Each structure stands twice: as structure tokens, then as C-alpha cells.
Length: 123
Image (cartoon, rainbow, N blue to C red; front, side):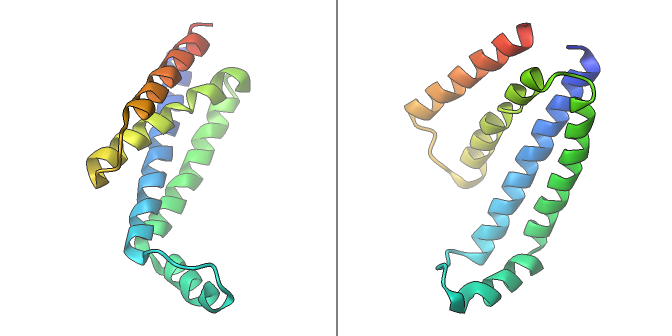
């Protein structure tokens, strides 16, 4: 894997994490809701009007274009496992931004992901 592909994969990870965090911020503002017919339109309107949700979806669209550049340059069997780094960046960011739990088992999972990414990248 060359430096350009690796940089594009890292950009995709950053965009994916940013999108997830923006969507979460939007849903924090909207709050918990029930899936009922009565809520369908009011919640849909709140979601469509949320600047965080709009930003998150826009970033996702950007990440798709970056991902297409990655796929044009490297096999999906190498590229796709690398995107699992977004699980790590999202978990760490959520821990720092919202105090989400990073238990020992989650930290162990993060270490396993890092080992897997290393093994895939080394190939």
C-alpha cells in the first residue's frame, strides 16, 4: 500500500468519525423518541432541520467520494478492514466529548482491531 492510498484511507476514517459524531450531536439535541406513527412526521422534521444531522450526512457524502478513490487504487480486501480504525477514533472521541464508557473489554477490542489493521496493512 502506498502513501497516497494510506492517506486516503485515513481521510476516510476521519470523515467517517466526524459524520458519526455530528449525527450523535444532532440526536442528543433531538433527544430520545418512540417509534410510533404519531412521532413519524414530527421526528422526521426535527431530523431534517437539525444542522448537526445535515452536517453529518454531508460529511458522509464526502467520505463516499474519498472511499471511491481508495477502491480505485487498492483491493477492497485490504482497504475495508482498514476502515475499522473509525471504530477506534469514534469510541475515543465519544469518550472525550460525552463521557461514554471505555471499559476494559472495549479497550481490549480496540487493541484487537489495531492488531488486525496492522496485520492487514503489513500484507
